[in-house]
Amino acid sequence: MKKYTVIWFGQMLSMFGTAATRFALLIWAYQQTGKATPLALLGFFSFILFVLASPFAGVIVDRVDRRKVMVAADLGSAGMTAIMLILLQSGQLQLWHLYLAEALTGVFDAFQIPAYHAATSLLVPQKHYGRASGMSSFAQAAAQVFAPAFAPLLLNWVGLHGVMTIDILTFFVGITPLIFIAIPHPMVYVKGNSRPSIRKDLSTGFRYIFDRPGLVGLIGIYSGISFAAALTYFAILAPLVLARTGGDEVALGSVQAAMGVGGLIGGVVMSIWGGPKRRIHGVLLVCGVSFLIGDFLMAVGRTTSAWMFAILIATIFVPIIVGSKNAIWQSKVEPAMQGRVFAVRNLFETGLMPIGYLIAGPLADHVFEPAMQQGGNLASVFGGLLGTGSGAGMGFMFLCTCIMGTAICLSGYLFPAIRHVEDDLVDHVLQHAPIPEQSTA
Image 1: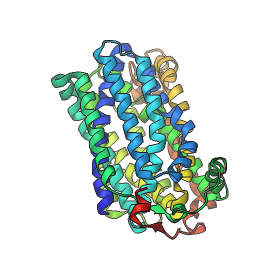
Image 2: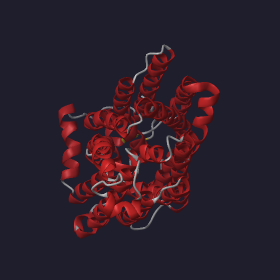
Image 3: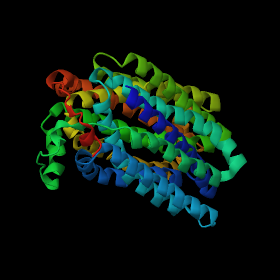
């Protein structure tokens, strides 16, 4: 675990810089319009090219040194932040610049994420896959805790341009361990072995999944989960808090920090525990509980403390959900194919998220917000539970995803291929090439 831990720590610091910049730009974007739609569109553009590029990225990840892929992807993301910084300093930064930067950063993420997960499978013993995923969730949660907490202070001290400069510096901190730590290659890529064409490689990831009904079903369930989360947690949580607090940045930072605290707690638990013995329960049952409790409390909450409690309860479960899911995939898919297979998985699991982002803002601004005003169509039915006025319509959307998300998760138990995916598919036998000149080529 030592090499993985060093890489993980560098990536965690890089995540903090990125999270601080995104929080600061989120506030900047809301100040420009005061609407939910522009904020939701940031999420839409961050995923649309990610989804489209994922299958091609997987082919590259399995053909090229995964360490170099991660370095190149991080450099690309740093370049996007640098360009936005230049535009900001020249007084030319506009919303559409943020949309374009998010879209291009999504392309880099399409390479970085499967490369990181596939590299983890080669660096970490199979019995510790759940722990490694818990550490990854911990890093993401730590960024969610400290970025919202420090970003408002940094904005006051160094301004938006200072926050973005710190982000660029943390990218290089994350890259440094990758320069010095070699990541072994799967046996199939030892020099001298022939490789299929790129076109055949592209189809291999799809065939691998479609030949295994359990993996297809798992993707179907998780794509529904991701869609429900995009509609509310990812797209309208920030505008809900800002709308119900009169644009209070501290309130939003507190809620997002609570989200990170929940992830930290769950990440620590998952890192030590490793997840349930039956990992499918960690995906279906735990995720259903997260939607049922978290979304309901977010819907009915009307104060910062209520939202902080709701988001804390919901996100404690997230590292267990993600860790259990990743452990299933990492143990069942051969390392030599993980780049292609994980990229196709990402394509389908996140494929509905851009739609969720795209419709969340208009649904909030033009349908549910008006309906939850005094005298609105829904206010007479749900006003007693959710309240009325600004933000109540977005609260109603959380109530909808509470029901939808829970139903999607628990429906997985109706399909034997999903319930028994761990039994039906055998674990791979990990083999890789430990020769230094091959692992660092």
